[in-house]
Length: 69
Image (cartoon, rainbow, N blue to C red; front, side, top):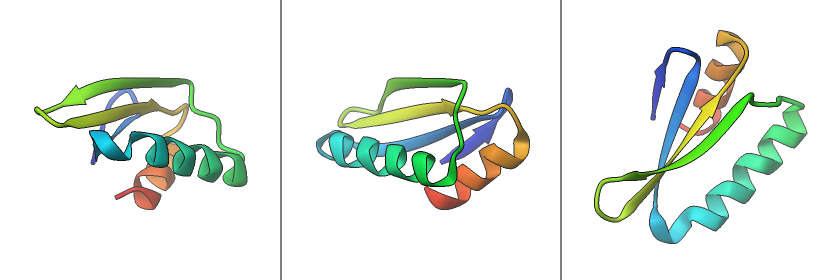
């Protein structure tokens, strides 16, 4: 997982874990009341998926990165 600007956190997961990972992230976001300003699914290598999640502040991005590192 990496943090890049503008405040994007990239979470990589195996393709088979996409649904579980999305549910886990959505639950965490709801519980912490954080709302990303962007969310994109991209391919990561041959058998992986990555989620690019964009936040308004560095603090929000860091909190999300810590939870999903």
